[in-house]
Length: 350
Image 1 (tube, one colour):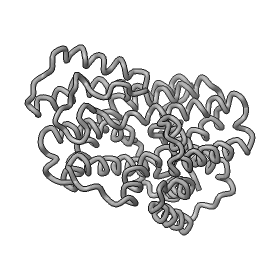
Image 2 (cartoon, one colour; image 1 turned 30 degrees about the vertical axis):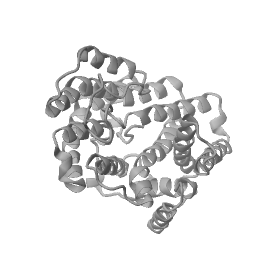
Image 3 (cartoon, helix red, strand yellow; image 1 turned 180 degrees about the horizontal axis):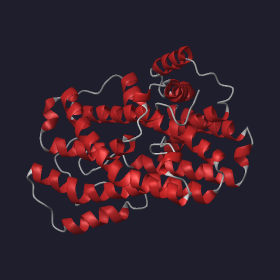
């Protein structure tokens, strides 16, 4: 059922990115914390879904062309150009705008701090969240301009993991992905039980589990039926599991199936988005929400604030796609000796 040229995964990823905007709107507007099931489904499933879809697509990419140079070039060109541009825009456009809106004035040495913000985070791992102590007075995230970029480090580590497994030929063994899935599931279980308290291991287990879930679905894709009634069951399991301390203990695979099979089953041409703005939506949403909060729009409440943030973010994400991301992908295809018509753009952050 999965057709690389006709699927709705770009729509699915866009919805996941919008769910992150809605989730961040709760704390930014001072709204009360939702019940735990809502926290998991709205606050965590969006990012988890990105990793699950990436696991499916990235493993497919390697299996389709198991050569390290084009694989690594494709991954770098999909993530880094837009990431670097986002760092620059945040440091020299969005952050100054937010500071002016708050009316506190620029701190001493702000220009140098802005440059350091870009340089220190250029390795994809976010080590500098703020710029010269800004943003100030924006609760509950003072000193943080982009609270979403940190997950890209883990995304890229997953890409490198596939590369290593491919080069060592471990990926050709059918037990490799299940073993990794079970290992990460164990880490998530230890985290839920309060035994594991190392942040690196906690994040590695969480994101590794979801990425492995997508990879596992790819491994059995020729035998795994894609049916709407199964999608419904997967959704029901995911929702029910949200009452657990960690819904991923039960719902990692159902969530991955829900998103991937759902995207494969939708064959409506209008939902085949050739312009994939999901990545831009994800990386620009948080700093734009911080700017809106600096302007006092957080007082509008969750629905209106989330709607305004979504509309603004989609506009910026569209510019990012056309000016940065799409151009980078064209360069990738030209290096591979392909014409623009020979490749369908299906992978967002993947």
